[in-house]
Image 1 (cartoon, rainbow, N blue to C red):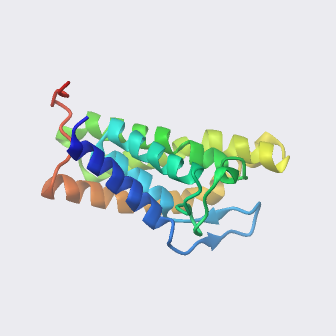
Image 2: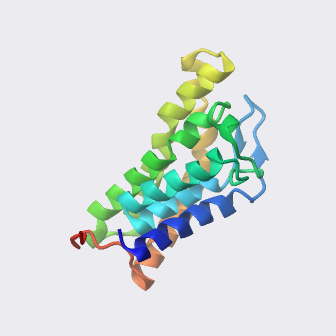
Length: 185
């Protein structure tokens, strides 16, 4: 991996951590909150591509694991990997990978709509593991936890719109993805 790739991975891990400093909006059910931090995952996928986005999110998880306060509300530590929202956090590398893979696939014909769809699918990909773990950690039925996606969807749509605009703008100004470029050994 090139030094440029490592720098970009670190940059988007840092962006994701910085978005964790934004205010949290608590929702009145099951301790769920709305935060901008997953926007970092969406942008990593849309700007860096699948592999680098997944690595950036793994770096964020490593920073959390060693106790750095990089999650929403300045939280960190191993305890965050077992709390009610842990399943969502565990899913970030997969979400970044999905967004990146879709953006790479649609790169030559990328529009706001396709960038928005990629971002929304990346957001929604967090739901399966996130809601399943929410059920386990809170001791509520899986079907009850699964229906909480309704609470997350409006915020995820807004974040996906913002991500779509930014992804298309970055592609025009400074494209970092070249799906046809061969990686050097």
